[in-house]
Image (cartoon, rainbow, N blue to C red; front, side, top):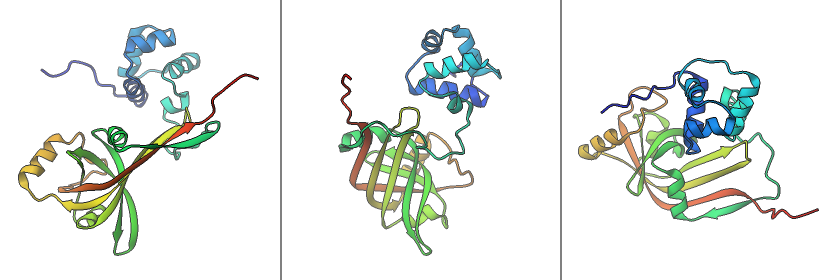
Length: 224
């Protein structure tokens, strides 16, 4: 049975809903944190609105982010512009943690060697068993991955909390030619390629090495 939940159709509404879902919160949770009515939070997610500055600040605080992030003011800025954590350090991640962070799908970067030299480009990917799968088209940079060892990287930066992680996968890439497997990949795809266009060549990377790191604070706190 199709969902009857209205889909947010404003930039602010989409960002609000996405951040709320990332935190595992309900509209009721956000309303309680922000001192607002649940129906108002739902309205903001679903309808065009212009909340007052004070309300925006409370909602941003409830969502553990900034007004600028919710308003989309950082979309053209590179991640990591915030201040570093006090006594920041890097913690190594094991393979299970890395695979968990890659989750089921997202946007990562594939590093390949092309006739013009090394290149790194973003791709929409999905996990496929133990492999990483993505689609492209002949002649495009990612297509040069087929039959060679490549690097695939996924990361996430949280500017608000100066936190982040990265996962690096190294392995051989292959073209997926089995029609049944291609149909399964297409059926399980969570989104069309963000780059648009016809991209019917599926590639899969079989990891030979998976490593990851997370930014952490080594400061233990303490008194004066």
